[in-house]
Length: 129
Ligand code: FES
Picture 1 (tube, rainbow, N blue to C red):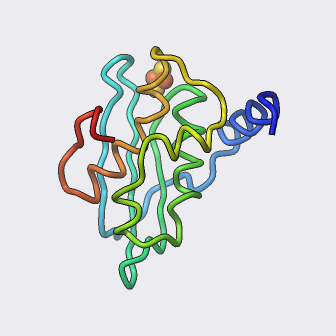
Picture 2: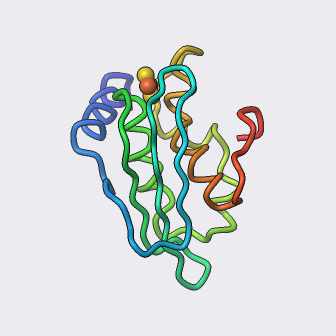
């Protein structure tokens, strides 16, 4: 896919986010802010047989943060929790498909950070994502 198709995909996810909302009850839930802008994302996860059986995200943020969180939920739905825990930032950045500059990196990775914090019960350091 060329850059423009990836950009369209990001716009589509930011305008029509997949798996947006909250889950009650849930097995895991965490929320955190992007310290650079104060935008916040929450992710709720349900697990069945060690697999992510449902996932929703909520909160607000820029197009990149919302699209990345939306794509992330699609990536991990139906995946074993053990694999989701080892998801690397490179996996998500590859899914986004366009170069993310340093100024937007925290936006792109906020959802992944929140998801891992929920699964591990503690927020990961940025350089350990
Ligand atoms: Fe706030 Fe991107 S500017 S999450």
